[in-house]
Length: 232
Ligand code: URA
Image 1 (tube, helix red, strand yellow):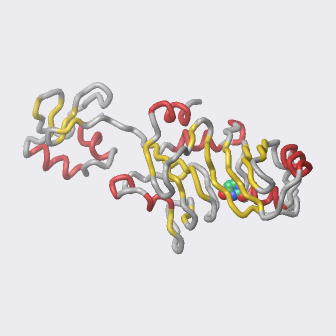
Image 2 (image 1 turned 45 degrees about the horizontal axis):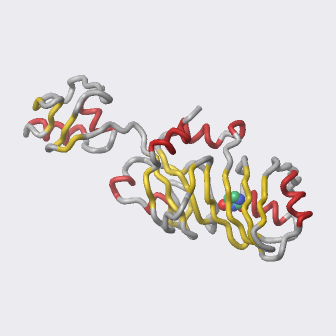
Image 3 (image 1 turned 60 degrees about the vertical axis):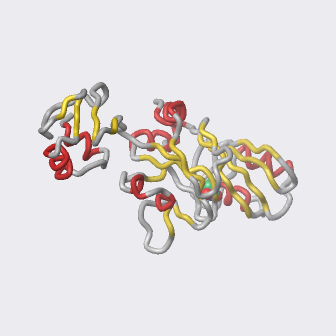
């Protein structure tokens, strides 16, 4: 890759800024000050520094946020706050987008990335990625409701949901794990049983868990979580 592309692709410097830094001798490749932006470097092997700081190459960024209510999973919205607004400016310029959507009033785990291929794969129905939610219903739900929802329900639009798993926690709370992501799916499943979801929080996505990350906060995925997210 060209040295100037190394900086511009990662949104560290524009090509023009690279030129200025090079002129001032502020960029080194393997310990040597370099002056030209068009030289070829190996972004994985060469040691590149900018103003004395080692810059390790990251093709893609993977962020986990704990979405509060009121934010929408979109990259642009004329009315509502969007999940990427929870990130600092240096991450906001990386063109990250949410992998899938949570409703505006749903809280919890959202992965933001600029890796379109892995994101698409994780959302594809044939990959059956499990997503687990803590839920609360307005009224107590019965064991019959659990059986019906777990087996799949034909919704008002004629779609029959895939089997899922429910773990009861109390008369009105529990965990539900889905391997698909239809619009308002959990709300519609309980709605079809005459009940109403009053609280929904996504706690895991595949083996990636929200843990105790506070609401509104973010963190980078760990290397092993990136492996989970990017595996084929
Ligand atoms: N199902 C819903 O109804 N809402 C969500 O946000 C996610 C799953």
